[in-house]
Amino acid sequence: MEPGVLRLLLAIDDLQAELGVSGALAEVGVYHGKSFAPLALLRRPGETCVAVDCFGAQEHNVDESGVGSRDAFLRNLEAAVRKCADDEGNEEQREMVGGYDDDNKEHEEEEEEEGWLAIIEGDSTAVDAGNLTNAAGGPVRLFSVDGCHTAEVTASDVDLASQCLHPDGVVLVDDVFNPDWPGVVTGLSKWCTEVKGTDWELVPFVIGFNKVAMCRRDTHATYLTATKDAGERPYGARVRKTAEFLGWECAVLSHGWIATFHANE
Image (cartoon, rainbow, N blue to C red; front, side, top):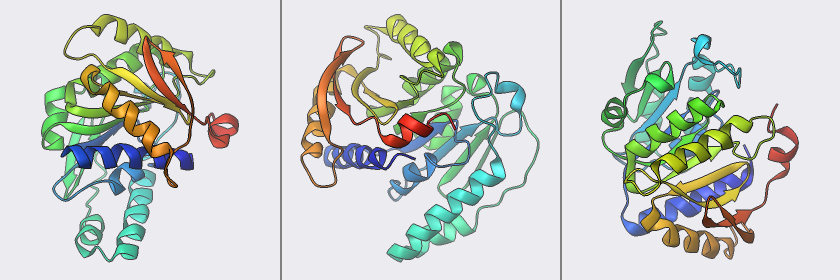
């Protein structure tokens, strides 16, 4: 996990709190939980976190972009949330994590929820947006896409995220400029072209730390300005410059040394 990503997540979360945006936090392709855990730590009271992954059903991992483990994911998530709950004295969150019941059933696609966490296990391209939204308890305000890296699956996962997104929400797409996974930028570009001008359209406002952050057309200026402003604060992710991507101005952050040297490990 690139430390700078946490600064970007905090800037997005701060703006959403300022705008009164509430909703679930979700990720497709949680693997062992290193990028899902920060999302879980941004959860506010009453919000749900949704994890989507094929885990043991590796026939759906057609490009072998990461062999995830349900047990490792739950173990790492519990450790991260419990640690932060202990540090902050959050007894409610500590009890919910400790009470998670993993039944280890084999399934194509299953929803399992305990407290604030819902898991959908199976092929992400077969996940229905309505089912995910129901599992989330409503629209998703922050959705991370890091699943199978083929063009077809990337387009499908971004489409799923768009359909489940809060009107003022943000989608983070991983590995868009990673040379090992050209299918990601291919799929994203194709999807953006197909939905341009529709209610599902997403436009980029940030490039950095091996990710692209996207939002609805009418919130682009708000998120872009907030990202630039956050970069001026001590904890903010520094904006190096702006550049155009897919026809939209984006704040360009550092690529990050972890993303540069270890993104494909």
